[in-house]
Length: 436
Image 1 (spheres, rainbow, N blue to C red):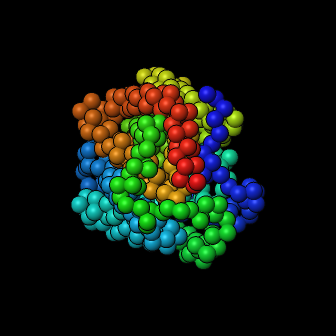
Image 2: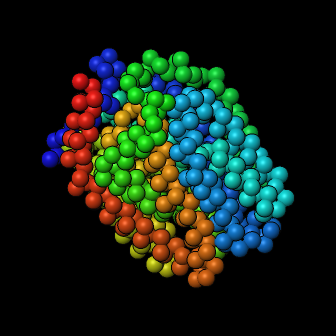
Image 3: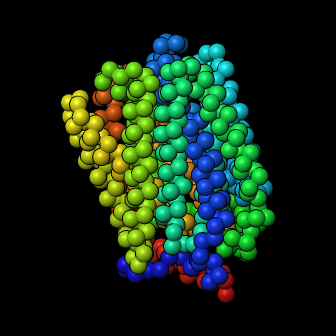
């Protein structure tokens, strides 16, 4: 049961097992745009205290400005990713980056809460399919043996982008005001977009793509057939659910850590943003490390990827739960940081599970489904629900509830793990029958 191979349909051909230099260029530029994506998204958290003071907003209002982005991503990621599979992934990426950069500029000129909420919604619309389409592009040019590592490294770009968004946004806001912070993120997005447009094209990607000649693509499949492929096994459904629930922790803590440090440690907004960025950086390092460990442990026993995901969730539950119940001080911050190291550790394994259990031709749609689960189950509700609870029992009390999420995620991953070997065999058999 521990020696099943990865899905054959996703394997690269013999001439494509070595990763070419251009693949790393594409990876770097695609991650660069992901950095811009999350810088535009998370700069808001750095200026929470300033917006609260300027517009007299409640924690619920502040949380809604953060959650509306994830909500738009969750609602639109699937249809826009399916369109991207049909229209062209690179062209879709360029259009999305242009939209979120323009919307971020709109945040900079917002005159009130309503205008800011609308601009943030358009940030979410622009970002909706980027995670799924971007990771599909990256996975298409790297070998299967690196799936968890590459997926984790790509998704960690979101965490690093959040670090930069909080740190740079907080620094700019401290000196030039919160409007300038949004403006700086928009300008950076436009610059990265121009570089990506010049360097990356579908034609240049084609020689690197191992599975470009697939027999069935979303363009030739009915919606019913596509959905059947996306939800073909119980284990892939568990991967979607577990991944979504476990991301409630980083979404909640990233959104509210600047405010937490401002309120409970007396830090100025700029200093609190810099401090919060360190916790986000810890999350990013944990994502990459756990993704690498999942590939290493699962090299000859793929089911161990599930075990890695379960371990990360349980460690986060224990460490973060203890940290948030300690009194304010260095010990509390250290324990919270330890919990944050593991809080998104299942991201890489989850992506590898989804890739292994779905055909390469629909990977953008599969990762759109994963993104949908990530946003609707974790990223979208996290900030606003935490804000609503904080308005009633205080921010610390609200954050103390958050570590229950990875415990629920661990249960979902455990169920998926029990079914994985059988489901993997079933998927491989179906692919072999289709190929014959």
